Each structure stands twice: as C-alpha cells, then as structure tokens.
Length: 419
Ligand SMILES: Cc1cc2nc3c(=O)[nH]c(=O)nc-3n(C[C@H](O)[C@H](O)[C@H](O)COP(=O)(O)OP(=O)(O)OC[C@H]3O[C@@H](n4cnc5c(N)ncnc54)[C@H](O)[C@@H]3O)c2cc1C
Figure: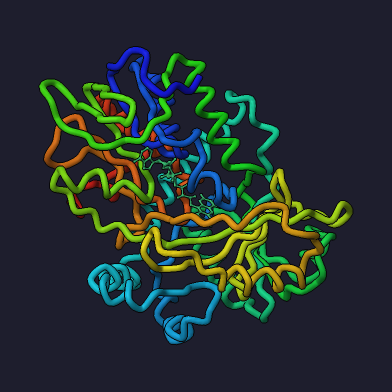
C-alpha cells in the first residue's frame, strides 16, 4: 500500500525514486532481509520507466556515442534529422559535456563499454525473466525478439552489427524482405533488410511491469511512501531524508531518481555531469487484423514502434536539450507518417508523452557508493537501456550494501569516475 508518510519513519534503507531502478533496488534489498522504505512523488513506474519502448534489449551494448556517430554528425548538425535534434543554446552552455560525450565515441572506447554493458544487461535479463513470473506479470513478456529494419540496402551495416554482437555471444539473424513479411505479416514490405535480435524480449507495458515489481516489494514487507523528496543530509549513523510530509531516516540511502538524480546531490558537493537525451511517444489504436508482433526499430526513419497494451506506441530518437525545456513535437510529427507508411493503425489513443533518458558522458550508468559519504548509494544514468538494466542495477546495489560481490563486474560503473 502506498502512503503519504512512513508508518515507521526509520529503516535500514531508504530508496529515493520508484522508477525501474529504485523499485529494483528496494526489492533486491528487502529480499536480503533489510527493512526498506521506497519514496516517490508519483506512483511507482510513473515517469521514464512508464514511457519507454519496453524493449528488454540483449544487444544494446554499444551506446549512441560510438564511432559511427562521427560520419553521421554532418547530417545531425543540420538539426533536421529525426534521430537527433539539439538545442544550440543548450549545446553552447554544455560544450564541455558534448566534448566528453564525443571523446567516448572513439574505436578504443567501444570494447570496454560494450563488455561492461553486456555484463549488466545479461544479469538484468535473467532477473527480469524471474521477477516477471514472481510478480505475476509474465503475461506481459513477449519472447519475439526485436527487429531492426532498414528501408535502404543496408546489408553491410546489418552484417557488421551481427558480427559485433556475435563477438559477445549475442545471437541475431539477418532477414530479407520476404523473411520480414513472414515475421510481421501485418506490415507492408517497406524494409529491404533487417536484423532480428532473437535474444531480446519486450513487454506490453513497462509502467505496469515496474508497478508489479513495486507490489512484489510491498508484498515482501517493504514500505512505499508517496511524497516529494526535499533534501538528504547525513546524521549520526546514517541519513535523514526530508519529505514534504515529514522526515524519515535510515542507515543507508539509494539515490535512484533517474533524470532528477543530480539535483539532490548538488548540495552534498557532487556535481554530476548528467545530460538528458529526451524522447517522446504517442500511442495509436491498432488495426484489429494487422497488429505488430514485436518492437520494430526503423533504422532509416529513426523511430521504434511497439505493440503495447494500449495501442501501437511510437517512440522518437534523441532531443538534446535542458531536461525541462518546452516540448518540441518536430521529431514525433516527422516519424508518425513514416510509421503509417509501414503499419496500419488508427487515431491517437494517448496524449504525447515526453521523457528524459539520463546520460553521463561515457553513456554508462553510475552504480555504487558515493565517494565521500558512507551509506550513500548511487544508481542512475541508464540512458537508452534503463528499463532493461534496472533489475541488475538494483541487485548490485543490494549486494554491495550487504558487503557482497554483485553478479557482474561493476568496476566500469564506479561513481568515482566522475565524482
Ligand atoms: C522515448 C524513450 C524510449 C526508451 N525505450 C527504452 C527501451 O525500450 N528499453 C530500455 O531498456 N530503456 C528504454 N528507455 C530508457 C529507460 O526508460 C530509462 O533509462 C529508465 O526508465 C530510467 O529509469 P529510472 O528508474 O532511472 O528513472 P525514472 O523511471 O524516471 O524514475 C525516477 C523516479 O524519481 C522520481 N522523482 C524524481 N525526483 C523526485 C523528487 N524530488 N521527489 C520524489 N520523487 C522524485 C520520479 O517521480 C520517478 O518516478 C527509453 C527512454 C525513453 C525516453
């Protein structure tokens, strides 16, 4: 049950933020026997963890800042490509962040980051598959893969991606126009070539999955508090958390506030280089006889369309700007007609949603203890793959809290690399 104020007021651990990362940390810690209070101003899974494309991606091991970004830059600089829009004023103010982001896109930076993300993703997919069953939400899981598809003849690009994934033991299949039609009989044959990520899964409502994990946490004795978080401060033996509804305290605190994480840490002297790869979605009534079977990433069109509980969700590429800048519908307006050219669907069934992928310059999340404060744990910055990687992030934090080793190598995610 979600309350406005904590019943107990104290716990072993307070988790700040009930997105997929915070909910996962809270559940994993309560599984280890800790008393846990989970706090959010919204219902669990109401923000970024609600609006994503629901892809549980085995293959997203090479982030957006990769070597192929450089040849694409001239197209992106025009500020007309649906894959990337950017705000010149924001870019001027954040030139340092952009340079660090680009510095990570060099060939020598691919392998270490891919290795690190592969470990995190592998551990997380295993947990999602277990937790979906435990949470009674397994019906939301689709083991139908993820199709990346090109309108152009991108056979070389598809082969190169397949070869890279194979280096990490990730399976995929190259599919031609005919094979794509067999996989997705409801769409028109617009794609020349595709790469089917066979070990990738998806869910039909990421928000509901996060909420189901939160119910599982509450069912294991955890407490959920719905309140605005004002500040955190160290006190003897732990941490005090100021909420709009009062103060609570615990020995340990986890900051899992997604795109809002840096705000709360600034007064403690941590300047987190967090930027926001904003994205939009809108849902549309599906055609009853021509539904999609899996998420499709239209590589040339720069959008993803996913069959969801409430219709076909179309998600956009990246908009680099301030987290709270006014919405721009340019990318969504560019891609919806492209999607309509491939799949048949009806009127919009949801308002436009906007979210912010929280991203650090190396596109790796921060997972671990804050360098200068005992009992303060950080878990944020999961960019495009936070819904996939939330569970193992939470499990790693819970393991480290209990002085145990996480099930994957967390060295690359150390907070010390930036703080
Ligand atoms: C368009 C788009 C598509 C995406 N598609 C995918 C995908 O297919 N697969 C994938 O793996 N990832 C995807 N992602 C990325 C993924 O959604 C995020 O990385 C992930 O949801 C981040 O989770 P989180 O728990 O860190 O943050 P959030 O889900 O944002 O949770 C943070 C929580 O903190 C709370 N909060 C913040 N400040 C306060 C405060 N002061 N007081 C109280 N509460 C507060 C918020 O209410 C929120 O609930 C996508 C993202 C976008 C934008």
